[in-house]
Length: 281
Ligand SMILES: C[S@@+](CC[C@H](N)C(=O)[O-])C[C@H]1O[C@@H](n2cnc3c(N)ncnc32)[C@H](O)[C@@H]1O
Image (cartoon, rainbow, N blue to C red; front, side, top):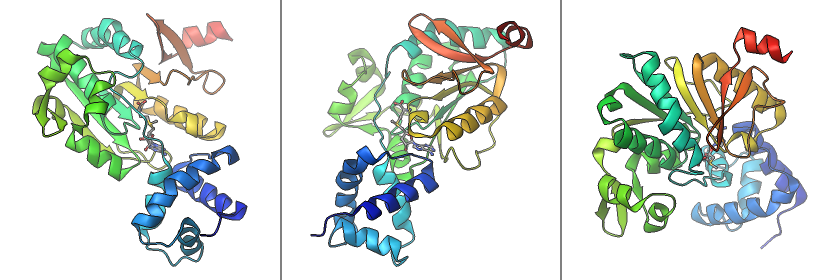
């Protein structure tokens, strides 16, 4: 089997950046090898170099580029990941949003939702703690990857996946055992609308949003892409709305129109009002 050359790695890096904005540093070459070698096998190529050669010669089936991007993407997620943002939703953010407009819907966008654990965690939280208000909550969940969205849509998880972050009481209440797996119950499944969306392409037309969860995806992008996405988030988020990012992500030095707000052990972001923007100048 031929070794993958530096020029092959560069070709894949550029393909992935063009289609998803994900920046793969050169120290991530091992990722290209380990994630694309199984795809080469599965799609009938003799080796990874043969797959890359077909892509470079434009002789590969059109869907192969998409499969390459999806295979490279990191889908790491878990139920109630990092705990604190969900605590902030429960104690402060949702009560405030419900009180602000007592009869209107509260609309949430879970961007880059991976296999669905994040939007389903929010749906379970609403069901548990705001049972009489759950019909007022609309959760839209999107991801770049059609394959991962199909998994999210099915709402079926392995024992390992439900062991990560999901309290036992919620497992028994909101999941049904199906063979060796667990299927989320319809009342939670139906609270989430899944749609495919690439954050660097045009977005679906959203109603004005009260809450955006965009966690652990900006880390993969370059500075100008992060800035452009945050500016677009502001254009879809209500002035009273909240943005949650991943625990290692921030708007600081990227978009100063967002102001960090600490709630318990969580930091989220709101758009500065004219007065607070003036105070920080
Ligand atoms: C690490 S997971 C984060 C999942 C979840 N938000 C969480 O924090 O647990 C990153 C997700 O971002 C998605 N993604 C990567 N690039 C994207 C893009 N350009 N547009 C939309 N989603 C993207 C991937 O498919 C993947 O499911």
